[in-house]
Structure formats: structure tokens, C-alpha cells
Length: 79
Image 1: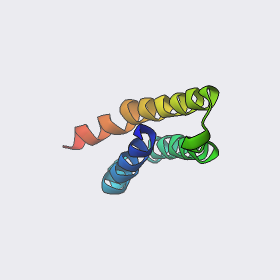
Image 2: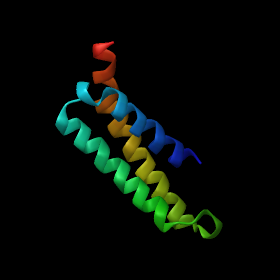
Image 3: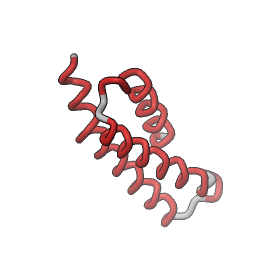
Image 4: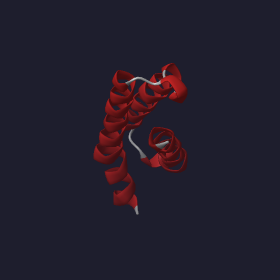
């Protein structure tokens, strides 16, 4: 699903560009990844409720905001 893909891609970017990303920014993004992963672990897709789906979407949006606002602008600055 989209959330799993976002986690994978964000981790990949952190691995590839980690040395170029400010530690505070990296910490914020890693925290958002962990929160989304925890939320996904609590909500098996077979039994997910509307409330759980909304919670996952919220965590996914938080990760996207952290990623876009912080990490990607740094990566593009060094490119």
C-alpha cells in the first residue's frame, strides 16, 4: 500500500543521502517513519476500521510533510 511504499522510499533516501542531511532533520523524519510503522503494525489490512485507516492516513501525511519540508530541500540543494 501507499504507506508501506512511502516508508520504504523515505528510508532509502535517508540511507543514500544521510550524510548530507542535518541530524535534527534526519531525527524528525526517522520519528515520523517510526510512528507510521507503528500505526501500520497495529492495523492489519484484513481487519482495518475506518478510524484506523484515518489514523494511518494522518501519520502518512505527517511523514510526507516532514520529508518534503525538510529532507528533500536539502537533497536538492546538494544536487
